[in-house]
Length: 101
Image (cartoon, rainbow, N blue to C red; front, side, top):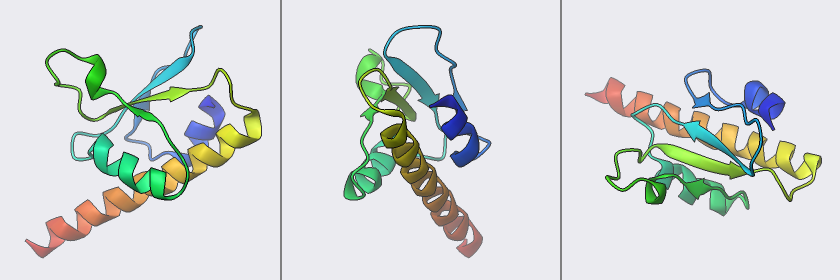
């Protein structure tokens, strides 16, 4: 999963390299909403868990949890590519909105 993230996610996206467990935590840039990314990803049949429910104060609304424990490698690569495409689209949408101001 980490190799696919390195290949497909924008450079400004940060992630943990797991040393165990079932999830990989991803932090999006502040200008991206995990909920918007989630909505767009679901339309393309890729899913993740938005991170905000795991924080009491809801300050981490731009985080994702990706499960890698029960999914085969090809499905992971496909899903990460879809998420990478969605992240780029959301970033470009924000850029075009900023340019119009």
